[in-house]
Image (cartoon, rainbow, N blue to C red; front, side):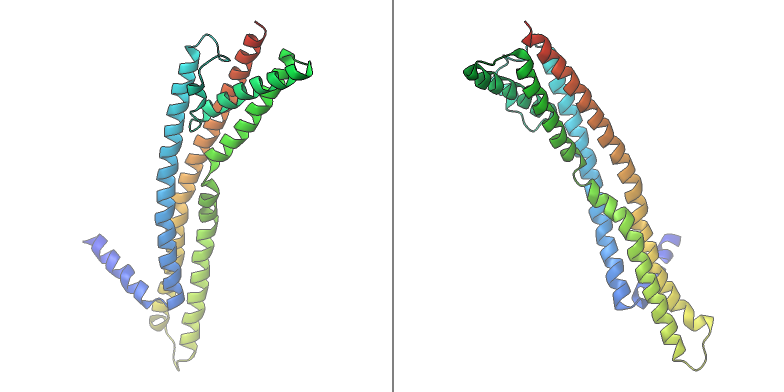
Length: 229
């Protein structure tokens, strides 16, 4: 019953808000829906990528050699770890072919090309991990300011309306101020969950970035050992 009354009261306050305030409130509501969609989607994406990474890493651990593995393992570009592996191995053999033609072939030169390819792949996958995070950060920082803008506009409008009356009282001023504060509430309702979601997802992104860097180091070590055999 209390929730119903609160909802009815908020609806009444929304109806008392001017057109600009209503536009801001509806816009913030849309931003809230988008933010929740992005947060859930990003969480599921990061979880799926981590599961794929761990499965691929386990697959490589079962192999005695990496440089001679079938091309089918290098075609799984949707998996970040597989993308690093494919770039490293392809760069290794490409460098071997070119350097051999020049008569300058050496395991050290091939490894340097493979390591450079790994670093480029890490940067590419880091951008993939961080996708949509800027959007969430923008909502976290921008939503309260949009709410504040609506409040300032609404208070200004309320005082302007009261100034035209012969006698003003708190009873005549309260509806306008309440309507103005609605946009601040809307801004905070959008920003607060988005802030917690952003920080949680940022932690996941940092975890996956650290893991892929560790995997890259392990991959480079294995390639170096194999190239010396």
